[in-house]
Amino acid sequence: MKSLLALWLSLVTGLATAQVGPSAAQAAAYAGLHAAAWRGDAAAVAGSDRAAVDARDGHGRTPLHVATFARRHEVIRALARAGADLGALEDDRYDAVTIAAVADDEATLAVLLELGADAGLTTSRYDGTALIAAAHLGHDGIVRQLIAAGAPLDHVNNLHWTALIEAVVLGDGGPRHQRVVQDLLAAGADAQLPDREGRTPMTLARARGYAPMVRQFEAAASPRVRQRPVARESVRGDD
Image 1 (cartoon, rainbow, N blue to C red):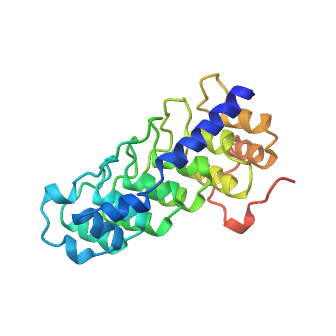
Image 2: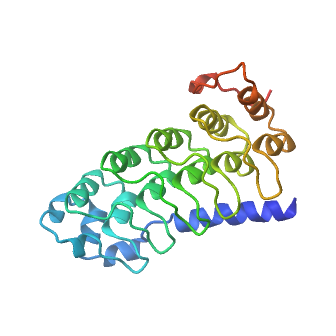
């Protein structure tokens, strides 16, 4: 139990650290398209060559990463028109999609996906995906967007966890994580894929006392029940 708690703290800290945008000092020192991305100057992007739009700062961030952290939608659109690599990874191996997913920034994610960003890239030191990160954090609206965009439902990261497993073992069992589980099941995620010790998501939910999640997995396993996405208000907390 102590080892799992330590792993949970490591994962939460790792995500938070990796998802910190440019500091005030870094932003003040920016020049060129990084500065334009930070302040939201889409006009400055027009006519830029590919080398400029994919230039890197000291943390490996491109102007697209900076614009994503800053939620500068018009800059993101201008960079895409200029040929920016929408799947570029910064030094911690995060792409713009995963940055928006971890930030629970549904509006910016929608822009990126509309422009053709890939919802299924393998990212982070854990060889995960944006969907796994969003499931971990209970970002249910993000999860729905990524599912609709074709994100791989059953990707297994290097911890041997899927999005369903992370929603259980790194979630709090509350309404947002329940909605994540329900939407993943409704989309066809495999609830029988186990962790490294052979435990299924339902087994893990039962061990944590997450009764509503256990019922979700039981319903998914029943041949008489067809899973459907559940409206936000219909998901209950623990009874």
